[in-house]
Image (cartoon, rainbow, N blue to C red; front, side):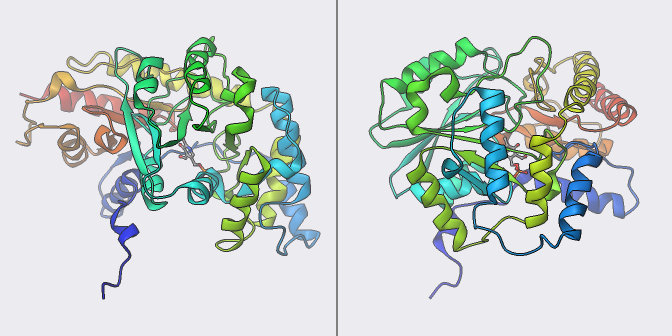
Length: 400
Ligand SMILES: Cc1ncc(COP(=O)(O)O)c(C=O)c1O
């Protein structure tokens, strides 16, 4: 009898975590590695949020809670959706989990059966296809392109939907590209979904607040209220409030789905950390004043990275609308050889050689389902980014 499960064989470990770990090991061995692979803000969690957590500990709020969240946090989530997105939810329609990751996972585990398909635009956040596979479903990836700004078209969505499609996963602004769908672009997609009433929408709005220039964030149930009854609107505090380690994510949607997600969570992790839940209440209800200044810092860093990368011959780098990632194409470098003698046959070879020869850790595009590209997370100090881009410039200039 085989010990490990078949479902485990269907998934691979997260490549961004693998590269971040490798960069850490090289650093521990004395190498001056710059890591641009981790998907988390480099800001500290704001003081008012930390203080709320300390108050919770001191008040003895350290016990189990309801499996999918305290009433105060569910209410704060409802208020957030009403305030920011014009969406009307009751606390019974809200689920709070250990990060947005668990929320998405619960929803897929609660709904997928063998044969069910999930449409995922590529490039995608690395976890979507693996979570779908783990839950027994089949990911159907739809490739966008540099030319369309890494966004899929309505025709592509239409063509990907079959009678077996259960979910469409939507993520804007996107990890790994930072591409955001403008309201009219999202409307074109929701119009397609209206024609297919069996398809549900899982929207991952994690980067909602990190948007630049004139980009206006919108979410499917807001753009098309007729989709409200089949949309799970997912979000979290990790990125907007620099709370990645606190592990709080949330979603709102139809009550039967929320009840099913609670059942999964109650038999796996139970409630998310009680103290973190109280901190998240403060994050959502307290001052939002630091979000705009943080976003301005990210925009400055985006511009810095874009301007340095666009000077490299063979690299094409579209300007992202949000998040803290850029996803340059290296189509113009494929087929060359590095100074260290490595043939750049694909983006994985590029990322490996860049780490080995230039001490810069980035994630190769194949991990996100669209090649040849690489992802830079620019959640790092300006000097670090400048030095990293300088090293990338030198590495690329030495390609033969
Ligand atoms: C697109 C996207 N969704 C969800 C998550 C999960 O975030 P968390 O589990 O920290 O809430 C991430 C984190 O990198 C992400 O980039």
